[in-house]
Image 1: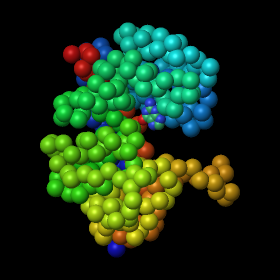
Image 2: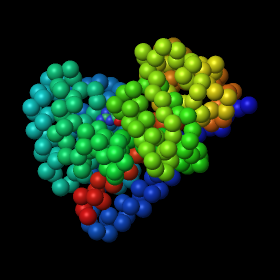
Image 3: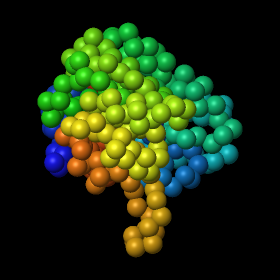
Length: 293
Ligand code: GUN
């Protein structure tokens, strides 16, 4: 058996169609949604992410402001900038690119962002709303995973979902979202992580297996239940002397081998990564709609 591909490009395109329609409606009311992306330091991967976010804003007709700060920016200087962005009427979404340099207290910075402009969905206010099943801004990668399942009509209700990874960005929020009493949720969720004793025994239970642990190819074919839906969130750089850049990007899942066991599978690249940026654009439009209402 060969799994059906869950194509991030196709699902992201459907999100962009909706985003464009809502941008036009906001334009009729004189509102242009605006996103500020803040980059501290020169981490090359972060710089690439921020550039691609700005590029997508431009393509969709959103206002975007990329603020690049030196690596020795102080915590207080960053707090001051966030407060300015909170007040700026042209900005509806604020994204402070992670990771920040070690002298900056990242969770404390998140707390300074106006929750209405928290398009990452990382502020405890939005995390809390999500957990109690109330509307708020949802974190982009987990939200993107739900959109993928929805597009392919793969309802998680009643299914065993195994999430591998417990990060605040993906593992914990996707588990929180899928366990809700709501559409595209109602799943039985297990979270496995680096200290799980017998990972294979746990992953084999998953009708839906979500790999978000950041280890290249850790999910092997013998860890996947026959006919499972496999969602690969990993974005890992591995050395490849044959590649132009000297490396290539692979997921947490051994794609070739797992495709023979799964019913559906996301590729890397071209899978979940495409959704993260699409949902960031969608959240920025959501935030603009809420603030303008
Ligand atoms: N770094 C890696 N992923 C993300 C993300 O989704 N948001 C932010 N702010 N930083 C990140």
